[in-house]
Image (cartoon, rainbow, N blue to C red; front, side, top):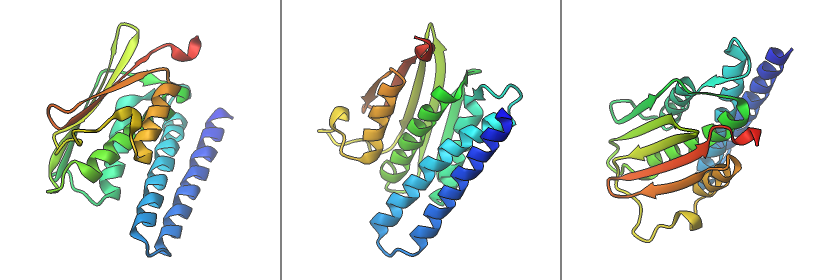
Length: 199
């Protein structure tokens, strides 16, 4: 029964994603089309969680390494980029999370990779590195690129883009903290407790 629920939720989300894609085909405004595409990517990242749970044996946890790879390749395909243009390297330990953590974390990863793909590489080439590990009772997620970096006056708390505003809210949802490093490209470092949902 639980497996069937995840399967149906995944299918419903894919229908929503398809509807957003169809709607964008009837619009001429590039800005609106881009906004719909980003919303489509967000829905897809959530659909992937339910797909992973549907496919898993215990129906309760998701292998974050596989999930991160799936999000990354989906975004490369959506932005029509090839792996020899933008390289995405993912390094994970064996990390498994339930849907309550994996879903917001997947959206965070989706937004940060999207941000790099859109703004970090004006020449169309670069590298994005993702790493997640468990240290003591805290997960540490890093999403970094070797691109042009953020403006000198950038303040994460007052980010103007919808994507980074969403990231800030989702980090608070998982009771985490986020900081960024602009010394080499841009790196976002997110730290959150492994047992935050059990408090």
